[in-house]
Length: 232
Image 1 (cartoon, helix red, strand yellow):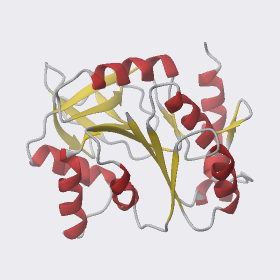
Image 2 (cartoon, helix red, strand yellow; image 1 turned 90 degrees about the horizontal axis):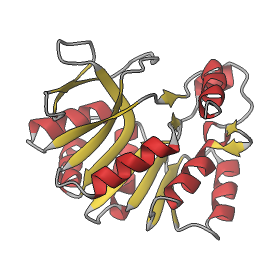
Image 3 (cartoon, one colour; image 1 turned 180 degrees about the horizontal axis):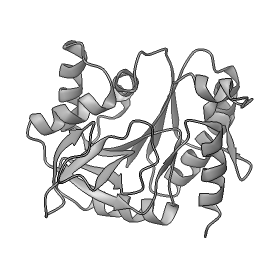
């Protein structure tokens, strides 16, 4: 399995709230967010781990250079206007049959992640998206799901069939990359619009529920995430 991490955001809200670390280096249990993901991925059959950071993250780059001695990292330094553009910058490293991509601030339990990866590796769907019914996000992306757990749509507001929201963990096949190219060429942006395009183009997407996934957007989210990973 190839993995990818989007870590090219500025983390401006955290800085405004007094957090001294760039987001990828925010520690949980003393381990930077980006290193935590790398180590989890390595324990789950990572062939390569491709990471994009922006040009204003020298500390993050130094950490990744050190970690590259022990893990199969591809490091991309590029300033991008959206997470979808960041994924596109990583696409040359995601040409194998299946890959898993996350944002750097996605916090989940490793046992649930392991179940998810095992299921995705053994599936024949075009994509498997992590979803959760834990909603603690400023702008959640609601996921339409039919009784067979097939994804029927992505919505900015709740709909009749949207018990879950997107968890920011994307298991995809190489078939998605052509659609990503079309989104970029058409001037689209934001990951949620890319996800909508996957549905519109007829790809088979399955939802995989997690009990809880936390995104770190504010300083208070760091406390929540710390408590969450210490619950077990």
